[in-house]
Length: 300
Image (cartoon, rainbow, N blue to C red; front, top):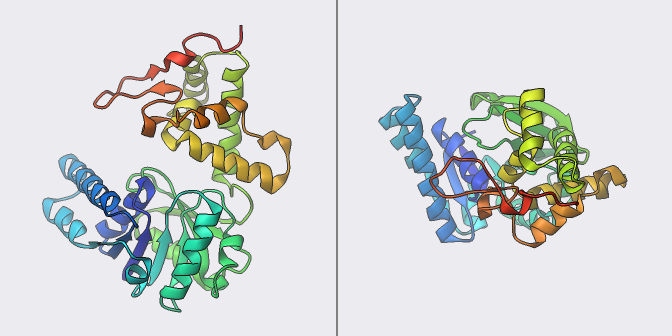
């Protein structure tokens, strides 16, 4: 494999493009919004420069990685020479199905089509293509250049050959691929999201505050980040979308999203990316400041 197309230039898409480019692959980064592509290239450049400052990359390697990335605003143009297409668009079923139909029509017949989805069925995605055996999940973790795990999800039709190819490819990126089967939430989010949801319920029911809940989990369970801070980092809208997939997929009330989470997303308080969630985020500051909303008990 030499030519990689990445669809979506947001946090995950630009991280995936960065990683493949750093390891010598030619990358076509695709987004309908040119402004988003320009911002993605700025982010990738900044992150590569951080690696240079830490001594993990040279200036020459940084330049080579940037030269490996081309940008496109058209899916057909961006995927026409792809050996692998990695979709990293918003976690929305209808959008992903629409994208995969277009990829399937435009990419070479031998190309593997992968989704970075964190919860949506690979089998459902594959069903809208004419190459179900070549459709697979590649769930990278954020931040992609740093995190080692790739959750490799086999759909119902995914072939052994496709799976072996993606496992090997992930290893060539110095990642640790883990093969899992295609059920709602896979492994990572089937375990993580109920924990985050329970932490939000614990806050909602007035058991403890934001700082207290996160401190218990960090110091008591050796988590590097508390569940509420992690939810902010992931994006509360993303957490809500994944919980809805789990709830709908299993029909089990234990996956029902906490009403507080639903309200926060409705109010536009989606975490770090909007400047406020359970914590307040100020540009240039690394201080962890609890949102004013949660400085007093929700339930008196």
